Structures are given as structure tokens and as C-alpha cells.
Length: 410
Ligand code: TYD
Ligand code: ZN
Image (cartoon, rainbow, N blue to C red; front, side, top):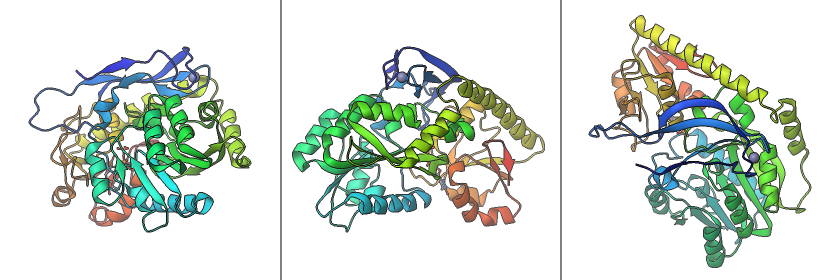
């Protein structure tokens, strides 16, 4: 039995008035693709989303041990074209804003090194910190120096002692995975030079609520960020958000630039997003309860759509086996009778079963040899890339089912 605990307090302000507004039931770990040889059902843990009534941070309180979630990992950043292109643009932005020759760039949760590779061949020193040993090894093989460790204040101290302090600390889609947020913020501040910058991206709560991206909720994603709780978290560690921009990837994220207090004037964009969040009343319970009601209705709609297609004799296969797909499939109660197989380009997932639903994950060749009538686009965050790539499937009469914000056949 994997270690699991229910946190009693908010991971930003330690407040204890937390309201559970969305309950997705007991779910298996979304990246625990299972061997077909395993007979025992996957372990399940409560999956519910809470909001803190003191700082309004949206979060999970059910915490699965990070060693279970991340020591081995099946997510690889490089399995699309969208993400490497996005990271290349981020690297150029960071370079122009902050870097001088010989500066140190450290990335937390550097995965297979895709972002740091965009700094290769440039006159900077780079270092990745990545807890998954299988993924850290891949990054090493690609020539990205990588420390196989979880990031916390002791790691920060070790890196600073060995390499000096960093001009830039990067963290993409990983801040929300970290339970000890004050420890993260303190570690980043200690690692950063006084003229340094912490540049990170996290999915944006406003996008989650607006587009009903309930499937991005799974045990790895402990936090769902808005600007104001982030300001509180970083401010306590001596960091100030000086700029923020909204980005289209992963269903809508924010790219945040934070620097030691007083390093540079705060860009107007920060206040604009704070105003947007005030306008949405994110510091009240209403938007969260409304979201939960819409998610319930969306589930009914998805179940009706899939069962309706099956009743017409249509064959349905999943397209992409992202973690979020497993939340969606389990929440809707779909199984192999509804979704025949799921095609995914990630070798680590192929030949395995999707956790909970036990739908087989197959390589793209299988999809091409046995095209279904309908491809359920579980990886909806790559809609443009996938539609462009699969024009032949659609020309031959195949349709994609896009699940959010409401089921849509294209
Ligand atoms: P992603 O949405 O990035 O991640 P998460 O697990 O955080 O929800 O995962 C996308 C998955 O879709 C990944 O397993 C690769 C797969 N994929 C394909 O199979 N084909 C494609 O053309 C693309 C773009 C992704
Ligand atoms: Zn709080």
C-alpha cells in the first residue's frame, strides 16, 4: 500500500478552513499505466479539489507519496511538436531578458531535458534537477547535466555549493506537483542570485474553470494556481511577481517571472490578471460551486455521447493517453466496451493498460491499421497538432470527439 495522507491545512497559508467543491471519487494514479500481467486492480485514492477560504488557493489535500508518483515516470515532454517549439521560444525570452555568458541556469523538474537543450550551444552553464531516475538518465544521454533529485531547500543548498548561485531558475509544469510550496519558494530564493529571476509556468486556474478542464485534476497536480495565492507564496520567500503572460499550451498556462523584491518594476500585466481574478470573484465560493455543477453536467453529456455512438455501432478509440485522459475515463466510468484501445506515441505507455479502465494502450501503427469511426481526443491540448497530423483519417470519414468544454465531433 502506497503512502497517502490527507493534509489538514492549506499548502500556501496553512489555513484550515478548506472547502471541498469537486469530488471526482476514488481514482487510480493517472500515470500508473499497468502491465497486462497484473491481476490485482490498481490502488485508488480519493480525488477531490478544495479551496482555502483564507488565501483562496485551489488544491488537493489527498497527497500520495512523491516517491510513488515520480521516482519512475511515464510522462515525457518531448512526445509532441508543440512543446519543444514552446520551450524554444521560452528559452529565447529568458536569454534576452536575463542571461550573460557563464551564467548558471537551473531547471527544476527538467524531465528529458527538452527545455535545457534549447540553451545548448549557448555560452551558459545548465543544470537540470529531475527526480525520475528513468527520465533523468535520458536527459543525461542527451548531454543535459542532470541531478537526479527532488528539489527542496537541501537540494538548492547543494547546487549552490557545487555550482554557485543561479541567474535563472526555471520550472515548467512542476510547481503544482510540489506539496511543500513554502520549501520550494525558500529553496528557489536561496539558489537565486540577488539579480536573478525565477521563471515558471503553471496551468492557470481561470482557464481550468472557463474551459471545464476537470480532467487536468489528478493526484500529481496538487495546486491549481491563480496570481494572488502565488503572490502570497512567493512574497513570503522574498520574491515578487514582476511579469506574467498567458500561454496557450496545456489548455492555458501562465508564465510567471518572479525576482527578489525591488529588482525591477512590476509590469502592468500582473495587475491586469489580478483584476481579472477579482472580476471572477475567485475569492468567493461561488465560481467553484458553479464549476462543479458544470463538470457533473459535462460528465452526463460525455456518457450520453459515447453510449449513443456505440448504440449506432460506431467503434471508438482513444487518441493520446495523457494522464488527464485517465481522470476523464475513470470519472465517466468508461471501459474497453466503450473505448476499444488508446493510441499513444510514448513507448513507455504502449503495451500497457490505462489505469482503472484497463483499456489497452497501443502504438500509432495499430490505430492506422485499425482506424476506428471515432477517435476520442483525450490529448485535447494538442488539438491543432493532431488534426493537422491526422488529416487522412478524417478524409477517410473518421471523426474526432473533443471532450471539453462540451463534446464536439469534428
Ligand atoms: P499531455 O497532454 O502532454 O500530458 P498529461 O499527461 O500531463 O495530461 O500528454 C499527451 C499524450 O498524448 C502523451 O502521452 C503523448 C500523446 N500524443 C500522441 O499519442 N499523439 C500525438 O500526436 C500527440 C501530440 C500526443
Ligand atoms: Zn490558504
